[in-house]
Length: 278
Image 1 (cartoon, rainbow, N blue to C red):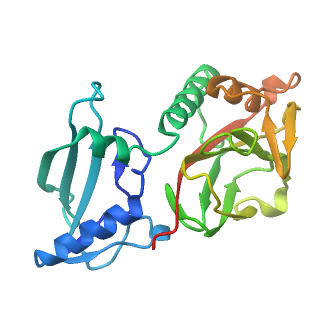
Image 2 (cartoon, rainbow, N blue to C red):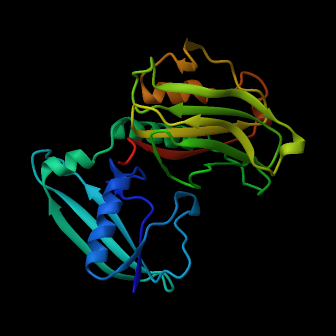
């Protein structure tokens, strides 16, 4: 019987892949094949959908609150045709291994995601939605949701909007070794009527150190974005802060005028970068 290994193995209750996720999945594939399974690891840009696969296996590593105690690794197996869970397991793993599986920058990305969620709750429209609101979608050529990228990979960020919009793209780096952590890749780029409903490239990039969990967040709005102070370091435009909540507030600052007519939408995806697998 054939078995599909999930596109990524996550850490705790997040959407962030574990450290060295690619190597981990390859080793898991070899072990399962030794047991007689025919194993498929889908390409990252297929959104995990592979034809003629009966079962899928997904895994999550958990670190206990007490860092000195063992962690757990949980797996589930689902029937692709029915969606039913047909198997599961929970095994204890050493505290050292659990720590090694934690992706670099995990805590900071978690704070960013919490800050974005909090901001969206505070600014959510109070009126009844009509279905005609501004919407933005974002993805890369390496994945439609989370992306696992290796050193030297070239990737393109795309977005699509349903109305003419001004785009701000905030990218959260794995650490601040480049001179900052929160960088504006697009400040207030206009997408006009001719590009509505079509994929628009926001640039091509190459994966370089440092490695770990990263995040790209696109904010689309109907009017130009409020100007924000930044510090230029080489090719980067860094927000002048190292704190997640402040970075989100700076990047998401609403315009000082026209609030009544303002339409906004935001979407972010997780990006995991790794050294090249030998």
